[in-house]
Every structure is written in structure tokens, then in C-alpha cells.
Image (cartoon, rainbow, N blue to C red; front, side):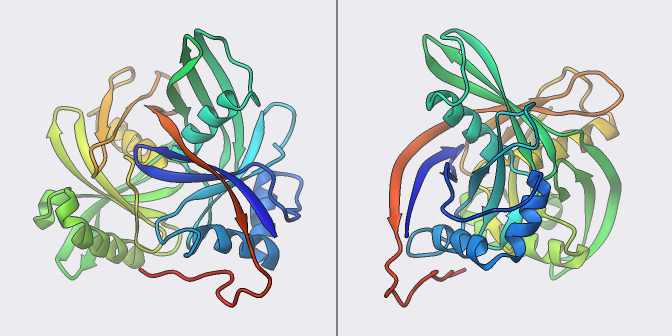
Length: 312
């Protein structure tokens, strides 16, 4: 089997795009295709091949391009990581928008912006791609409506009881102020951040996608480490996680409509985020994605290491 991919990174977080998956992914909608993929050995096996070592690694992320739900979208996508198929992915949406314009799949002006509408399992999102002199310069991720769910939920951990705010930004996130447990959001503390993020997620239940450990650098300037799935650490500021943070800050009154949150990642990359006035909070998150390579992966039928392995 041969599999062609186009690889991008958004703020340092990988996104492996599979434009034409070499397996059948059945379903009328992207949400149905996700349910099919979860239970189908061929589709899930392809995820493992592209995500696991030796072709990937424990923090790999990617997506299978699939047909959209209807003619209102440019494409659909099934997001995946080492533990399965996620419902939303902001950094992946940013990468897909840049790729769709750069590849010619979606038309865009030489100077100006174009919307690439994408169906994802949690709904319909938009990647608004900005270009200058034919070059992609930024991508806005227009998220699904996001909302705050709970404040100061007590979560028992090995570091004592921590308080977590809970919000939905395409996926469910618990948000913890890292300073309250004595942790800096820096690369030197990444192992401790991952361990705590896993504890919080495990304590709250499987419906939670991840834990956001954040620190305040200034008014509306935060740095975060988002730990999702089973111990994956987002190198970017996390798109859906940023949407969840916007929902929380909007609910607490810290972020008003039109104000901008500067949201940095543990490796120093940056998203900016805001939301327009209205009856719902619909975050708009701006970042940038860059291509890192094009690959044709080969699966030898005699290879005993197929589909691969994960070391975490």
C-alpha cells in the first residue's frame, strides 16, 4: 500500500494531510464517517500506520480529507491522533485552509481573503485565508459556537485539589491556572505539565478532550500548555482549546466582544483570538501554517512492525 500525504505545521504542531485516503470511509456526513472510522479496522489501521512510529510519533496529528456534508463546504475532514479520531481541531483547520489555497483546491485573490468552509465532526467551520501578493500570510479559524459550562470545579490530583473551569470550544476542556500548582508553562516543565494534564482529564471523565494549563503574562496575554488525548502536548496554542478559553473569559467578563486575547504556546508560537458581539460566542482565532514536506509512505506486506508502535 502507498499513501500520499502533505505535511504542515501550525505553530509547531504537526498536521499530516491525506488528500485521498486509500480506504473506504462510509457515511452521509462527516460525523457519520467519524463513527464509521472508529469501528472500521482498515480506516483505523491507516490512522495507526501514519501516526505511529516508525512513520510518525506519539504527538503526531493529521486528517483524512473526505467529502463535505453538502455543497455548502469546500471539503470535509476526519481529524486523528495516536488515540483515535477527534471531533475538532483548530490548528488542523488553519493548516487545511492554507493547504487548500496553496494547492488550488480553493480559489483566493492574490491580495485579500477567501473563506474555505470545512465540515468537521463537531459542525461547520471556516478557515479565512489571507493573502498578499499571492502568498498566504495568515489564516483565521472561525470556530463553532463555544460556551462556558462550569467554574472552579474541584479536581483531586497528586498535587492536591485543583480548581478547573470547564468550557466547550468544539471539544470539552478543563482549564487550570498553572501557578496554583506551582508549575511554569515552559518547556523545562513539560513532563510535569503532561502528568498533571492527564490526571485532570482522567478524573473528569472520557467526555473531556483535554486539559489547558495556563499562566497569565499580562492583561489578555496568556501562555498555555494543552494536554489532550492520553498525554499529547500541543506545540501550538491549540485552536479548539483557545476557543474554549475565549468562552471562559467571555463568561467571566474578562474578554469583551471585539477585544483580543493573545494566546501563546509552550514553544513560543502565538494565536490571537476574539469574538464578535451576538447571542452566541463564536471565536475567531488567527494563526499561520507552513508546509514541511510531501510524502509517499509505503507499507510492505511483509513488514512485521505494521501498523507500528507508540512510545509515551
